[in-house]
Image 1: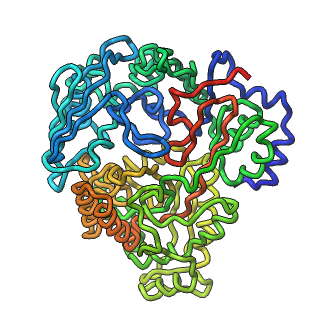
Image 2: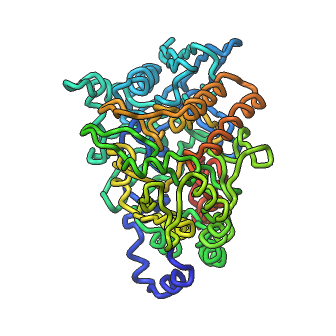
Image 3: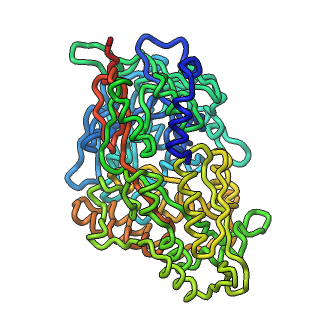
Length: 580
C-alpha cells in the first residue's frame, strides 16, 4: 500500500488543472458521480457474481431490506401473506408497474424470472443455490394467480424465503425467446445475452434508473427511469436525482484525488485515508459516516480441490495439494498471520479481527466469547504444528515437507485494490517467519475470475465476500456444489474427475440447510453457531480483519441514512441534491 506520507506528497503536488481533468463533463442538472475500481462484468443480472454491480440501480425484486434495520420491506410487491403452516406465500404486486420501455410488469414476469431463469439448471445463476429448499434441494412452486398476485408453495418450511425472493425480476417480453432458444449442447442463448457489449438502451429495467451510456474503461451512466413506480405523497416522481455516473477508476489513490477535487460525490473511506479526509470535512463540504465493522469477509483460502481438469491433469500440483489439505498446515498459517499488526499498520487501528463467515450485525453471529474458535498470532505454535505434521526446517530455516520439497505457493488477488495488495505483502512477510515462501501476484480482475471459476488452476487467493444479516445466502459458498464453493469448487460441465468432498464440508452444508428449516432466532443461532465453529475448526477460509465501515458523502446530498448494512445509497430514490 502506498505510504500515507507519500500519498500526501502526491496529493499536494498535483495542480488544480490536473485534478480538473477527472471531472465528468456534460453533467446532468441533478447528478451523483461514484468511482468504481473496474468495469462492469455483465449487464445480465442472472449471471452476475460480482459486487458492486449495476443491478442495484436498474432492478428491483418483490421485496428488499431496510438499509438501517435490515427489516424486509415491500418493493415491487406492495404486500404479502404467509399461511399459518408457513408453506404458502401470496404476493400482491403494486398496481400499474411498468418496465423502462413502458411495457406492463405483471405476475407473468415474476413467474418467468424464477421458473425459467433462476430455476433453470442450464443457466449458471448463483441465485439458484439459495432458492433450494431442504435436504432434497427442491425449488418452491411459483405460479400466477392473476396479473398482480403470485403464489409461492414450499415443500417444507423455509425461514429465509422472503429474503431469497428479493432477487431482480427480469422482463419476459424481451427474454423469453432467448431462454427457449438453445444450442446443440442445451445452452440457452440467454447465457450470452446482455453482455457489456450490448447497447445500453437495449437493457430494459424496472428499478429507479436505466442504463444510458457505457464507455469501457471510462464510465457507466444511469438515467432516471420515467416509468419507476415510486412517488412522494404529493405525486412527485422518484428518484429525485436525474443521473448516476460510475467513473471507472482502477486505482484507489486516484479515486481519492477525484473526491478531494470535487469530482466524486462519495467515496468509501479506507483507514489509510481517514486522517487526511477528516481534516478536510469542512473545506470539502462533506461528512464522514462510520457504523462499526464492515459487513462481509476478507480472507485467504487454499485450493483444496484434488480433482483433475478435462485433460486429466491435476488442478493443483499434488505435492502442494497435500500441504493444503493438511489441517495442521492451514492452522499454522492462521497462527502465523499477524492480524494486530495488520490492523495497526494497514488499517491504522480502524479495524477488528475477523473470525466468522457471518457478519457481526447478524443476529446469528457467534462471538469468540460464545465459543467461536480463534487463531491468535503465535509463531512458536505455528512452527510446532508444522513440525508435528511432519514438516522440517533446513539450515537456512526454510520449511520443507516430508519429501524434502521447499514449501512455497502463489497467492493471487485482484490488482488495483491497494488494501488487498498491502495485506498480501504482509502475509508474504508473515509466512516467511515460519519458513514458507509466498509468491504474491496481484492480477487483473478478469484473469482472477477466470482462474477461480473456469480453469481452477490456482493455489491460494486473497479476496472477500459481501455479507448480510441473513446467512442463508452463503449457501452458495458452503453448499458443496455451490457456485462460490471456491476452496473445493465443483462443476458439471466439464466435470471434475477425482474431486473429494470432506465430511466437514457436507456437515456445514447440512447445518445451513437445517437453519433454514426453523423460524425461531434462538434456534437458528444455535445451528448457525455450530456451522461457524466447524468453519473455524477446519479453515476452508482463513479470515483476516474487518475494517470499520466508513464513507465520505457530499453535504449537498440530502437524505443520507448511512449504515454498515445498507451503505450510502440504499435509499437512493429518496435522496436529493441541494441547490447550495
